[in-house]
Amino acid sequence: MVVGETIAAPDGVEATVIDVTLVDPSNLKLTEASIAPIIDQSGIGASAYPPTEEAWTLRRDATGATLPEDTTSNLLLVLERTGDTSGTASSVQIRYTVGGTEYVEHGTTSIELAEACF
Image 1 (tube, one colour):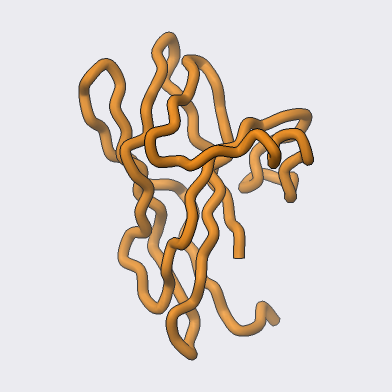
Image 2 (tube, rainbow, N blue to C red):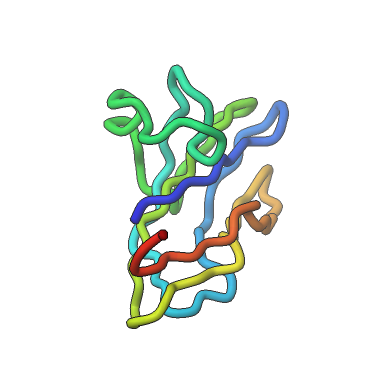
């Protein structure tokens, strides 16, 4: 399952992602986190999925990725359930640096990955 958050570099400076983790995961494993530019559409969490083909081919591993100043990108997560019941996480945690200072932020989306949606 791929879910997305948007991630933005602060105004006037670039940011470097240290790592991406799940907050309070239960029966859920983060297998991949990548960054993709937003090209000709809004963020995944807002309306458009999947990313454009161009954005998908430009995606890169989130860990160590540099976000140019004044840009917004998609943070794409590949998730896997690890048990027979729904997998959940209260949010996504993103650790990053700006100018040598480390910051931690939590995304706005809680996650539930069930056997069936309906």
